[in-house]
Image (cartoon, rainbow, N blue to C red):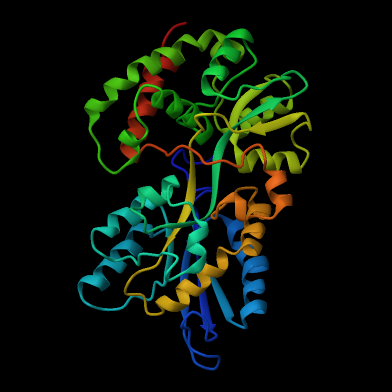
Length: 381
């Protein structure tokens, strides 16, 4: 089951990538001199495999930089790593954490301590390929650089839906015109259902009012019309108001053609299609305003022992070649703008190659799910 606050692919592990020898590029010491670089990156075992079998071997071949990867299970210690970085800065010491991937909100928390390097095209050329207005860049106060992402999109069965909705309002109209053929999973059990809820909330309250670090419960009064709207759809939802538990259950309903349309995660939907777990008639599109999504953001401590080496590695990770590996392996979004990706990749993801709406912060997410349970799922018809 995926967390509803999402950093694409479950945050269940950390990888420590140790670069033990580097070239004289981007201010890096020449070969033969030691310049260790440690990268902590969140992800599941598929992320470990991608680095171990694809990204790191290619990086070594192209740069003659030797790398070592250490896999730490379950992703434990994210907050303690942030605390460690802050403590080193306060005591005037360097940190051995040279690159750090984590939730953008953690990066934002550390920004007030002045612990992060401001990454721009002036100190890392490929930063120019990253959209500065991506939600996770904004949430991290500009210190987090995405290298992979995912969003919720609309899945529909083209055998039965000849003209798919392209806006959220058109989805709502389609649900009423086709009772029983749409559902979304319980927002408390999955991110795709939560995305359907959040975009409804954003119809009546600005996304930027809820996606930052501040929290004011009084603002939630703007959500009442959205909750009433979702409650009014209940009799038109599959099986007279059945909200499955988890993302997989929704994909299974689509696969059996019990429903013809539902919000799903882009990476999971693409993966199911590639594996033949969904009919070829299932198509994925993004709508307007877009569903929510999330990036995996990397930050570099300003007091990192090998900051220049860290910039070198991250710059390489944002090349179109490396990003193509990331996109194909994870069926997700690149960290760089789609226009910098090869044409065949753009064509493959044409229906969903758009930006996504930002997630509410954790406190608003918790409140939104609670209110949905009380006023939508728990209500009568």
